[in-house]
Length: 220
Image (cartoon, rainbow, N blue to C red; front, side, top):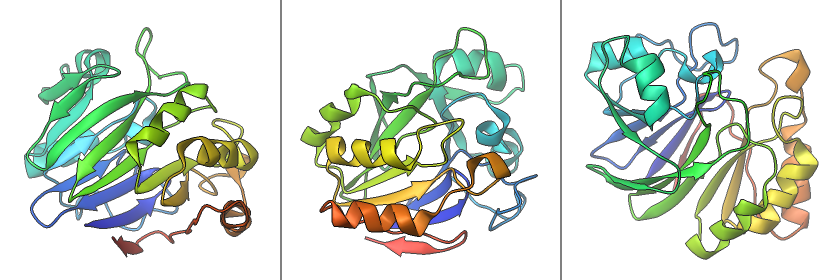
């Protein structure tokens, strides 16, 4: 099972048979590790409707034939009008996939689409559980994830638009993952943060963390 960080909140999850791309903001992303026309995907997961998360999802889906997965409202507002079919679920529900299954988890964040809820994703893939929080504030719902025995938590630490490093550390203590990877920081001035300092604070609290450089791959 491989996790590749492509910049901002974009990750490519690869279990050897399926490539799952999350929040493909590549064009216009100064830290993007790959161009939108070079990335390959079998499925594309989008947490909400802001441009730095929808990103290049439509173009990549058209080029690769990848199936988009998102909330019902986001599918109807963004991907349906673009002529791109989507598997559309809702918060709390599991969706079966070729690699296993994925659950849409709550995220506290404006969505970019009126009436649409933001979400995160809990992936069961390659024998691992990977939680992509999406853009979110700290929420007590994260305590429920401790029972999932999450292998890797991908958490925003940028502050300003999402939770910052202190709240992200509190999230780690709630979720209790085997490993945390910070995301959604340093892409633009308002979300400048010291990822290494967050990782050190998490490790000091007893929870290993690792900062991935854009393009870097972690094998689980």
